[in-house]
Amino acid sequence: MDAVIVFCAQYLFLLVILLEILAVIRLGKNVNEKVRFASVVIVAGIIAFILSRVSSHFYYDPRPFVREHVKPLFPHIPDNGFPSDHALLTGTLTAAAYLFNRKYANLMLIPTIIIGVARVLAKVHSPIDIAGGWLFGIIGAVAAYYIINWALTKQWGKSFQKKLVHIAMATPLLNKVI
Image 1: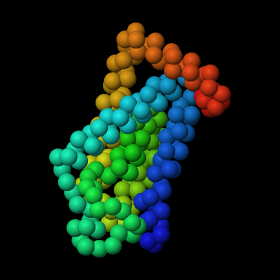
Image 2: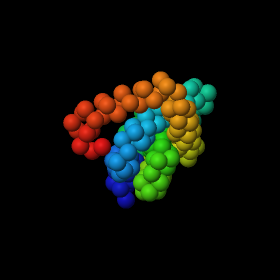
Image 3: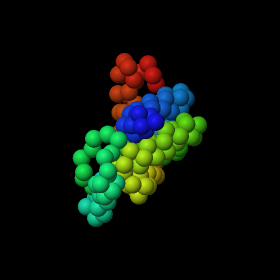
């Protein structure tokens, strides 16, 4: 059972990333919408990352293996556990997907929750670390959604989106999946 927990805690996030890519690809034929989705994901990641780094300076939560004087299921440095980077990443991706492709977001929610639970069971995070990561991910995704939509009402935003679409269409790999 420990091996399953370790796998989920350390590697299951790759499935969430794969599902995010599929969510963008399966969005349909509208390249502008795919570029908007990708833009939201990138801006959401930046916002969530900034929130997590700032908050970690104001709130310190020792990792459970440090606090409880136990051995975690896998080696980890005994630094501040708040917020969980894995929860931040998966929460951001899942929340961003929810705003564009709810079918894939619902699929992503399952491994996102499993990852959070596994990191708690592995004794590398407490539930508040996981909740903090998810919360900052959701805030980042929602803020990015509104920022990108606002930017697209401006001429410079529309022009920038056209350039991104042009780049995506000119890139052989992206052109095939878009």
